[in-house]
Length: 95
Image 1 (cartoon, helix red, strand yellow):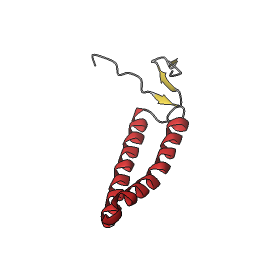
Image 2 (cartoon, one colour):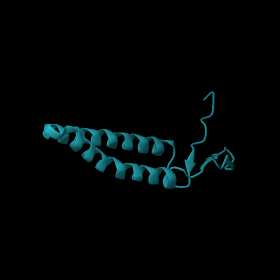
Image 3 (cartoon, rainbow, N blue to C red):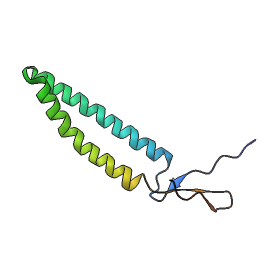
Image 4 (tube, one colour):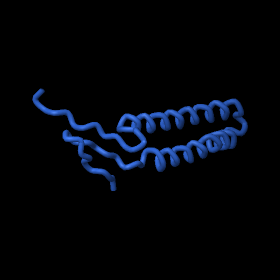
């Protein structure tokens, strides 16, 4: 090849860039599903649309946000390490 591929970045938990992207996509999809469920339930109770929508959406939204906060701080915030060609670690901590 004309160029060398960069070393694959992984962190201590074993999740690399793909794991981070997968986590973001998963939580985005969860938010869309929660929104769809809240709209469906609110549409069934059209006399109190706003109350049912907010009650359902917030009941689903708050636990998801706590879970996202936990995943982001405990799992995805591990310092990423990148190994060079000779096996040495290049750039250990993120700021």
